[in-house]
Length: 330
Ligand SMILES: Cc1ncc(COP(=O)(O)O)c(C=O)c1O
Image 1: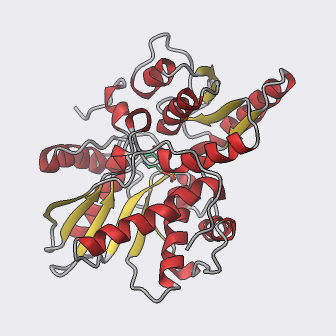
Image 2: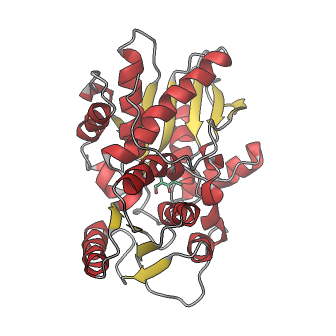
């Protein structure tokens, strides 16, 4: 279905699909354990990094460089990928140097990454991207030949990881004899969403039934339509040489669960963090997967899913942030 493109095998795949409890309204919950992708503690970014690092190595890059929040999972996993591929990693981070790294930042340091603290706010992605461009220039001048990855790794190359993930998940659903109604997950930089929709379009074009793909937006950008999910997903399909295209009507972002802003915990998200821990021993965090799960639980409570439905939540990871200051709800 997809042309093979440069890839580095970094993740432990396929991740398990686990059955969970019955939701409000009677639907059966399933959890796709993308928190268990293996690389440097796991999470959704491992799938993107397989292709991003594939491109970096093919381009002869001498370093990896990316950008994110102080507790960026994407940065932590990029650091782990660099360790595995023997490439130096430079991380451009929001916030300042507290002198006592914890959670994802602690792990990034352990994986040997160089941290560049910008002092910028967590949600100021424009300033963070500008800082990434500056550090890229600096490393280029030093002759390091960095491969620069934008926030969240949400390029067509990165999103290819989730086009493949959609196919992997559907195969598992077929093996479990279920035909899910919906796949729900957390969206922040949009690449996971675009990749899943690319995979969905490719499978649908073969005449197979496909679930709805419902993104729960936890960052302002995706909640106002940035990036353009259809454009990103279609560019992913082009990269993978698949003629299917995404129907814009299939893009659904539930914007109601972000709370005050990106990376600011919400009460519904915190309730979901505790619910996950006590319902399945699952770890979800306050910035990403907890808010995403709060969206799924909220939709179920509103009656969106019925007793005949199977609903899949992709646990995209984020557990290391539980060990950052204020990582666990009080
Ligand atoms: C744990 C976790 N879940 C979900 C996401 C959202 O993925 P995307 O940036 O592809 O929208 C992220 C992104 O950083 C994440 O770290």
